[in-house]
Image 1 (cartoon, rainbow, N blue to C red):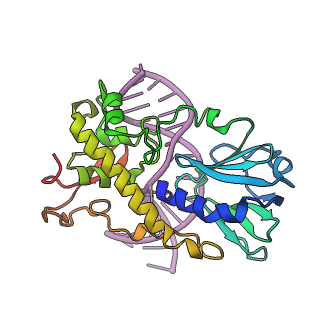
Image 2 (image 1 turned 45 degrees about the vertical axis):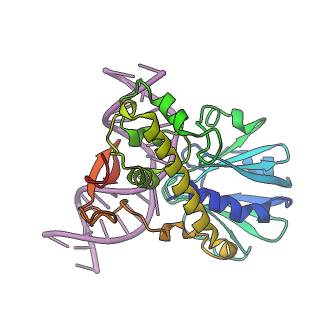
Length: 271
DNA sequence: ATCGCCTCCTGCGCGC
DNA sequence: TGCGCGCAGGAGGCGA
């Protein structure tokens, strides 16, 4: 489920209820995620204070006194804050009891997510140290996309979804940003000009910013709610709209597969 | 270095 | 109602 806006919405939602409080106890029911949850995670975090909740790409970084909890939500993961007596749901793999009498639950039906323990600088961890720039940072630009794409034949949609190029562009927003930019998803990366990459970079930034803003509208309900952000209500121009009329020109939206992922575009608006 | 394919897993909606 | 199938918003790892 999580695209970057949902991860950021989750971060904003849990941060005020975690930072400054300590983890009283941890209960782990299922350790078999993408990588196993370390056998000694409980003893590393129990009794420790949470300092901050940051994000790098789609990874969440919970700073604990003597290390970091590195969390990824995969395709189907979610974190939610509940009252301690709230019943466990199917696939609630981890429960953290907090000193403010709230409980954090990690739920992940498909178990593509992860929860790892990192000592030292988490940004130096092997999963994070080679990631591309944050799309909402100044390091991300059309110039960056242009430079990195030289000599690369891979489809531009796969290229912008490569976290080593830029983090946080998931399957939905890749299609949406390419539509906004008038670029065909299957175009070879190296064949796109610098001006078009500048447009694309701006639209990637735009679509993610808007989606995060929408996620923020449901933040007040985060505690005790289902934790679902509102960004999904956002109007999608092409994603999931196979054979439906283009919002700009009414031409039927095309559906293709690129890199084994569903891809949508308007054959008239995108060249 | 780059590319394309495979994989991990459960749940859901669809057609029969 | 049940079953089999295809598909799902991620991304690391592999062989070529």
